[in-house]
Image 1: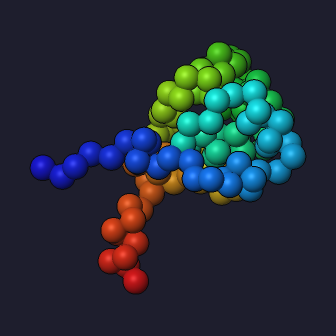
Image 2: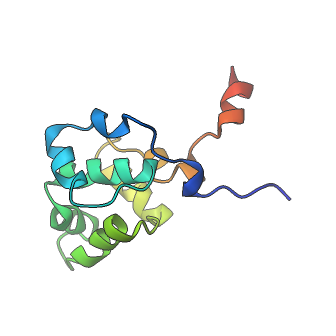
Length: 116
C-alpha cells in the first residue's frame, strides 16, 4: 500500500508569507499559519474580501456559514475537496484546488522529477 500524504507534508517554507499581497497579509496576521494550504485559503479570503465573503460565495448567499471558513483558518482543518474545487471555479483559477489541497490534487516532489 502506498504511503498516504497529508497537509503536514506541505509545510510553510521561510519567506512564504512574504509572497502575500498587503490585503492577504492582513488576513494572514489574524490566524496561525499552518501549511501551504493556509496560504491558498488566505488568498481566497482576500479574493472575496473577508471570511464572510468567501462563505457567501460558497453558498450563493443562501446560508452564510462564516464559522466554517473561520474554522478552516483557525484550526487548520482541511478544506473538503469539493469546496477546494468550488473555490477554484469561483476564482476562475486564481486559487487552484492544488493550492488548497496539495495532499489530494498536487504533484508530489518525486512525481515532478518523473515528469521531466
